[in-house]
Length: 352
Ligand SMILES: [Zn+2]
Image (cartoon, rainbow, N blue to C red; front, side, top):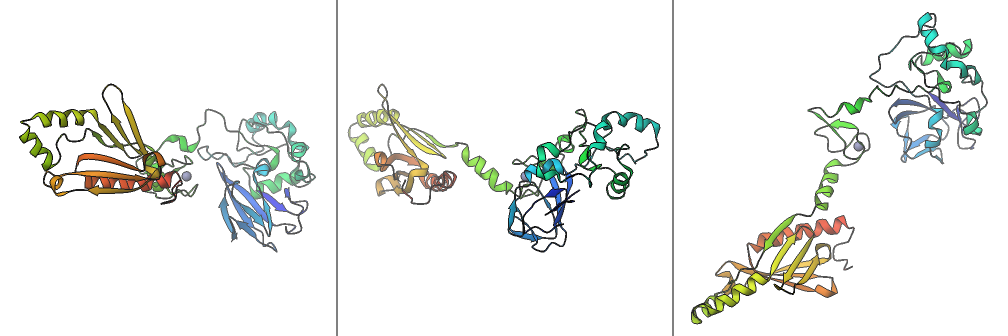
């Protein structure tokens, strides 16, 4: 726990008039979570714009003391860390010879900076902040600390010997969340914290997970239709096929095979020609409308023509002939167009 205030003996000194002498306290909870509690300050404590009494925060949150906004990240080393959760709690037993023997060696630096008596560390953090000492027993108290500081530390937080020793868990000790998702838990795709499998919003980072997944899906290109236009798609063409005894059909057939449509959730591609190929492409985010034309001769056979109206000057109107089920395709394209425009941050009808 560290006291934030305008003047010593606060642990984190912010010499601003808006800040009370003892303004708030901040306590490490777990990983990168902290508990920020207002100490009945004059101007109040605010987190992300809301006045709080006591709230769990991250150091990246927007924190204000009165009107004084502060980035807490540079002060991280001044807030004592609690031991990692999976570690069993060792009750303080300074008289135990084994504990003393183990911890006396790394504690050499302990007397240098007793928590409350030391000059305010904030004046020059790099100099005043004590060196990080890796303790072999993270939860053991500092037996070498002055008796005054020791008793205080034991009363308030026996596991945290305040700025003197930052306990570093042994590398073999895995953090809680690497245990992996269980059946009713999953990892947040954004911050990696464990959350309920059914959660829509992450309680750690506050992000909307369903929305994030929808965005991820929209980013993957999905083929809606791929193939050639039908060789014969109007009643008139059938008429010519009959009249020419099939010659017209051959022509229609070759023309159909020369053209390949590839319609995806992001773009429409038309490839023409067999030997010398030409390509036409319309990006869906630049599309403005999809017109469906179905003259009677086509409607009889269930075919239609889809016209893609785009803001792209090189392909203002792109025509796809001889398509079946194009009503469904048009609905899908409209949906994909909106998703693409949203994903790329293009306003509807912006006409980029
Ligand atoms: Zn998250």
